[in-house]
Image 1: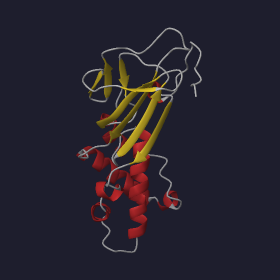
Image 2 (image 1 turned 180 degrees about the vertical axis):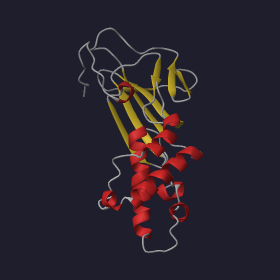
Image 3 (image 1 turned 120 degrees about the horizontal axis):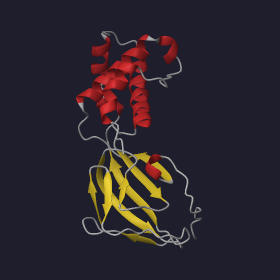
Image 4 (image 1 turned 135 degrees about the horizontal axis):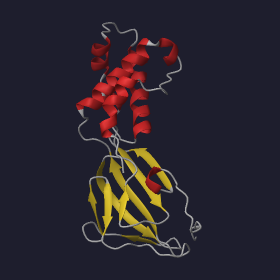
Length: 201
């Protein structure tokens, strides 16, 4: 089945121009592997077990909210991203990219062609660089790009851990905000720790 194509005036689709981005937890790590319950309790100076369930849930929500807000991943993810068309360099929308599963072009009829690493393209940091550009002037003959890859820190930077601990402490102390586990507002102290890890393409 053919893909529907946009007009020449292609709109900005969001994350680094991607038409669609999907994420699935794919690793064995969970939020409490990043900030353990015992580490969080030590940071909070909590020496009782009454709030263990609450703190565990709060760790998960703060980690997930941080990932969604800053587009870097602490829990390993499989990412599938698609672009309507592409140029010589393509910035991957979810970072850090740790391995590529497949890079494919998709033609007008939906037929996929798998590209070869270090031949058709290579990965530098979180950017794909292509030796050949599969892109054309006519919007009806443009070749779509589909990238499947793994994103997530293998070792969590200490600044990110400190930012998470600050956010957990802030939400734990402000009980009116965490009644429904709401972590929609990140504290400024945490933002300053996360800022250096946000990719500015």
